[in-house]
Image (cartoon, rainbow over all chains, first blue to last red; front, top):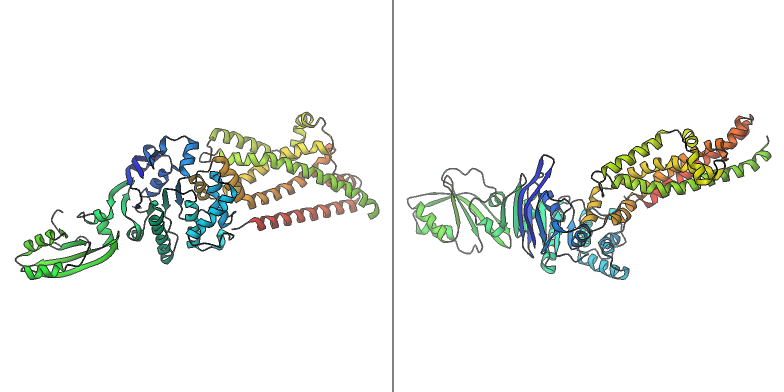
Length: 320
Length: 218
């Protein structure tokens, strides 16, 4: 749905994007995770060409945006929704007026606009608040107006620029739940940037981790979790690093029904000492990570048993 | 002079001032508003970056603002004659008043427009709004309270300028104060016109502040 290749963005001597490729599939929620200054905001703004990349191309819904002349770019942008960290609502307009703005830009007639605005406000749970001014709303409500506005043109893609970073944890969750629902109900493809792992964990199907203007790691979360040594796994499950020599880190995904560790202890002559671990709900399934130390004569066959049973086994001091 | 003699002089003078300032305000907005928008839009990181043109406009505006009004009024007499056909009278004064106030107002418009957050401008662009739509539907409405305040300051400045218009036969309250209060030593006329000017300015300023507050939704 969104395909960016070879994106570079330079401001004078500063390189904000250093050859970034991004592939967002239709209907998925794709998160770009990184510290401030990693280039994720520039990346997002290159997708709808608010920033024109120094080099590289951006294709959204099959259309190469970098090749479009101004007027057609504006028309293409009407099909790409965007929400903002500080909401970017017009204080000169009411809530309904804000949601109507993109419809006015598109030249939708007044009666149709009013009908659509009512529909959109209901979709985001703000029915009856159309006459309010943005300053009368809470942060979460403002972002709901932002979302309603972004959806006005029936976009196939929604870009989210740190949309929950200015909100408290409970409100963040309710906005994320709304995004997730819109993704499911409308088949909306969402590209979001965030510095919060929590956002990625709660809603994303895929992720790209950025730092220093480059993508360090990207892919479906379910796949990254299964990749030994992936940065995502290490960041989601913070275990003491580096692991003590000989410590074994086990990552298990999917159905935790089978008691593998106790099976292993019965089958092989090993003792297990648990050093740390946690379980997270990720990308629709639960994923756990456990750090243990194994002692006993049959340690290596025990590890082979775990590998054969589908666990990802990393032994400290050994190459993954 | 007695009160009964002064009042018949006050009305025509007030009316002349109102006419001069009224027309000059109208033309100032007509020319100053687009100029102010241009100063913002042609900026290096503006809607339509034309830095060379923006610098040129900036210089013209600064030249306009560095001339004292009384000098400007005399300096542009040929221009006034070209536009109005005469350089004397209330109508002729509207030309220098406008020329004097346009750069002043344009700078105030520029300041007000710069107060509008880049985030709302970019949000509008992300929604596919054209440059004209951004100016008409975002910049100007969002800056409206600031524009009203700027207009109020401009009108008050115009009242001040219009007092100098007596020198080219423009009439008005300033002219009345100079001719009667100063040249004929009629202190009462001086006091009455000064008080009247203060009252007018106070009313206009309060009105401007009230309107700006009413339309602000911050």
